[in-house]
Structure formats: C-alpha cells, structure tokens
Length: 117
Image (cartoon, rainbow, N blue to C red):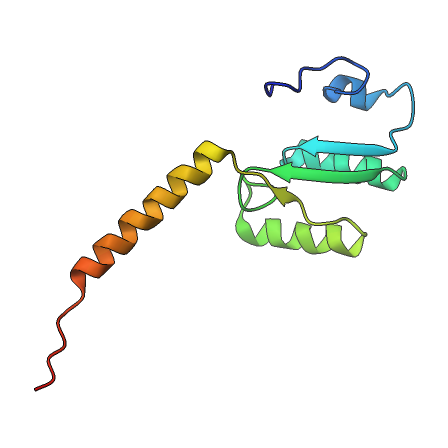
C-alpha cells in the first residue's frame, strides 16, 4: 500500500472492491501500469469513467518487452485512453539529478584540450 492511500472501500479501493464495485466510478486513478492496472483502467474507461493511470517506471507494462508495451500503448491510445502519467518521488528525482551532475562532471574531465596550433 502507498502511504496516504490506504484502502477505505469507499474512495480508495483494492482490486477486490474494483472487481465488484457498489457504484459506478465517475473518476478513477489507477496506480501502476502493469497488466492488472491496465486491465482495470481499460475496464473502467469502457464503463465511462474518466481514468488516469500513474506509473513510476518509464513504460507501461514494465515487466513486458518494450516492443509489446509499445504496441499496447498504441492500442490504448486508439481506444481513447490518455498516456499514463509518470510519477517520480522527490527522493528519486533528486537521485537522478545527482547522477546527471556526476555524469556531466566526468564528461567535462575527459574533454581533450584544443590542439589547434
């Protein structure tokens, strides 16, 4: 479970409540774009819900081959789904920025002096 998104069976559902909803969901936020998340997103979209999918990894169906994930993304777009939003925590973003700064410093250190002359 995600902190702050503990299931309450009213606003925050697990897969169990999503499989047998007591009422229609006008809006749905699906956390994770694995096979189950995409299946629920597709189902609720078909039922008329405004669905948003969030994913921490850069592709949908992250454990699948990139080519398969790309085909699935095209099919979902064609069916009217919006692209999943990539979510990155502040801590992960900070680490990525630090890696980028470290990489740029290493690259700058490797530059050869201008040998014109």
